[in-house]
Image (cartoon, rainbow, N blue to C red; front, side):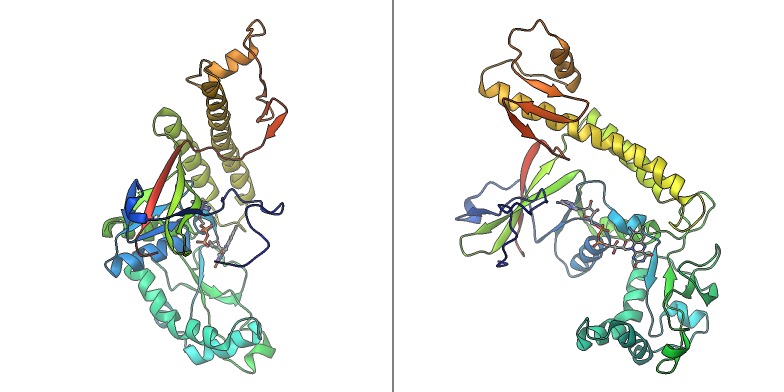
Length: 357
Ligand SMILES: Cc1cc2nc3c(=O)[nH]c(=O)nc-3n(C[C@H](O)[C@H](O)[C@H](O)COP(=O)(O)OP(=O)(O)OC[C@H]3O[C@@H](n4cnc5c(N)ncnc54)[C@H](O)[C@@H]3O)c2cc1C
């Protein structure tokens, strides 16, 4: 395990992730599901890992605290690749792993190990092909100028500084910004969804078992420190979870409609964030409901079925049993002097076993 002062008991620990749970024997533990590999967080890294593991014959569970995609799906969708990718070749651009390395080493200096950079350049073209084999589409329409983002209709461009004369002394310039491509006026036009969603589709086809609205909360480890599983919190299924999913998905779609640097993108980001905030409000309300129900159950008091019931109870000044003060507007619960703040609520606690972890 990592030897660090920053851990779940430290004041600086701002994550919801808890300290690992230690168990004596994984075989005697009651797991809710099992797989060779459990991946927590399905953005670009997670979904790529899932595809690769499935290709290697492992069974894979993927979990995400939302519906997946993360910043990858909302990104500008530019995949930096070179060394002679199929798309560079199609556009007639001459590049090689050595040329890519000679350019990048000028940018990275000693920030990363030379061997790591070399491997990145040597595998870049085959990794691009791997993405394409898993359904990601790129396009060779070539924008010849340097730009942080190319004009609409261009999907291969100079996203780096290889056209700057001082860099050109050591490496031949080559366009390496590959934008994900998708057809149709109302679909994302080159944003990160064009990379994430095909990979998700591909992984599901290969047998990925996906748990959405499922948040990893802690590792489960043996006494010798071997990671054998994770504890997750799952949003309960039903009407409320469906509403949460709908709001999240609307918010995500709006935020992914335009590349971040395009006119109108910030307005869409803003409107999307309103849907996401509503979904987060549902999470917080459920969290308040669950916390209060647990407290009341422990005192043999009546519990509430819905947040609205709790709200009603809170309004009712006549109720003699009323011994709590819940500030619903500010989304926190004041309970006998104890202030609890939380962003997320997931009700059911499940455990997943990762045999290969
Ligand atoms: C606006 C924007 C534009 C960008 N444009 C580009 C670009 O064009 N090109 C580029 O190369 N990079 C770009 N980036 C950076 C790039 O998007 C990120 O570096 C990359 O997406 C990170 O991928 P990831 O898989 O590590 O994380 P993510 O894609 O963010 O995935 C993490 C996932 O983990 C989930 N998660 C987190 N905690 C938990 C938990 N406890 N339990 C379960 N699930 C959890 C999240 O919900 C999320 O889905 C951009 C970033 C932003 C914000």
